[in-house]
Picture 1 (cartoon, rainbow, N blue to C red):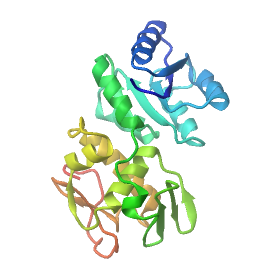
Picture 2 (cartoon, rainbow, N blue to C red):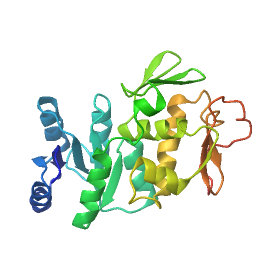
Picture 3 (cartoon, rainbow, N blue to C red):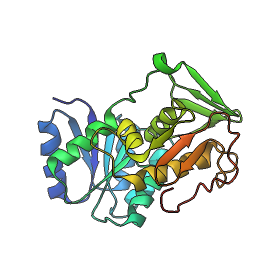
Length: 244
């Protein structure tokens, strides 16, 4: 049986009932909200381990709700959406979601995504050391905090796990599927667009010039390489071309 507190945010009562039954059977404690505003009120009173957040909500959209949550909380967020287009998935992840699940979903898929989002990074401070430094960036592994040029950088849980995994494999060409399975879980491997979005977000937050990255380099048609020294960055596009 699983443990943890989950907040369901969905305005469709039947979907809420179904998800509540699934999650309670799996061992989770569950609460629900019917709008983004109601969810924010609940989150200010109570602590949760994960939020299942529908994209299409009345009033404040799920995307905007996620952005507001990310202003003050690192809680895991999985977006629920009926839209499968790349644009919509990018919007959810760009807002700070850790993952997304498209409706209709299979029970085992939803539970697997929840377990993957709740699990701790496989990399421990004991393995990596308490502090990792490169350029003007410092990662405090135990505290799960990052600073750049002496200023705190707010990362989502998955952004932090991704950065930690890359930094623990300096100057190694890492395939997309290896990164996805290490950071998200063994059930992942083909969600390359999800990885690209988080790479783009990390570059915005830690690179001196995100368009010409020094640290997170693209290995075209393969994956990414993390360069601790930041010396070989000239010419890397860091963009959205195929294979980036």
